[in-house]
Length: 447
Image (tube, rainbow, N blue to C red):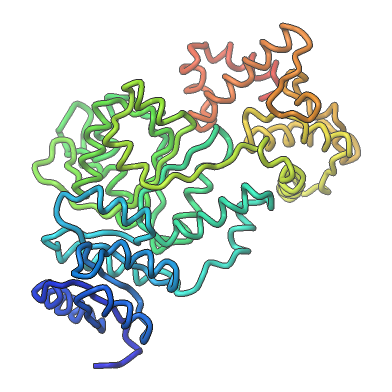
């Protein structure tokens, strides 16, 4: 049947039994298929016809599936391709994902997993994501931000795990949301979790759920975060804060694509894309023995670095104007403007708290300014964090008191970021009383 109203899949495998199995399974899904037994046949079919998905074996008589993935990436970048690898060949699968594969399957092929993969791949848009969509959500036209948006467009079309690195407050969760929203799982849930904010004794229950009566206080069955994200995306923020015992269980859940609730007898299959982030240096955490190397390799298939604000100073003005417009819309007042000296002060500031700090700073200045004009003094910038002679790597410290105050500000901002601005949790992390925390926030102008 050659009805192009049905979506078409290209199957590439030198084993007739595998080709037949895939052909029958996909036919039952009302999909058309074409088959090739080697690399040359596959390339010829791609040149002569249009396809919606390609499934390829890794080992082919005249080449490899990786070569086919690279060929498709270069000539048909909107065509998703999934790799079929031998059982246990995780390294090969990761190489395929890095090369641009949408996802992978292991032999013997699990037909349920195959159907899930195909359904997800066919939900991908057949045309490129409009650049304007990302521009509206991720402001800034600096070279670093143009690069981030380009990476998001590419990663949204994959199921590869992504490690989003960057300092506190630079927008890692926003980047994760955009990867989810521009991909085939956009209609399913995006579930963010701050790994550092979950008490150790509750972690397994929070991630995998629990059965009624499995421990004191378990008065009913409760699904975990993996179950909540089934079909969608689970974003593990501050993943470096996971204790080693939980890292082992997380690794198994990711590898087996199944979880077992606390007190449960059977594993439950889950279809979840994993994105993770941390402000810490994950390589250093591995080297120090605080983070498992095998989990690191499983999560860090592809790294996306979000640049700090000081590396994209040309974005400060459009960001600030956007934030001031948003403040005006929420208060019903005219939008405030930045005095040229205030803008210059912002562009010479190091922003240890990045975009989140800029937002808080403008909210405070908005309430202090006169006649809707924000002066430099309204920003209450710490002098010790201004750049010296335009060099963002040098700090000008006038005296010890200023320097210590800035160190205190940075530590408090970091703790607030790590706890999603939960002041009580941040105070506990810094071993401060809530009263002391409130005093310091007021003193530093962060309240």
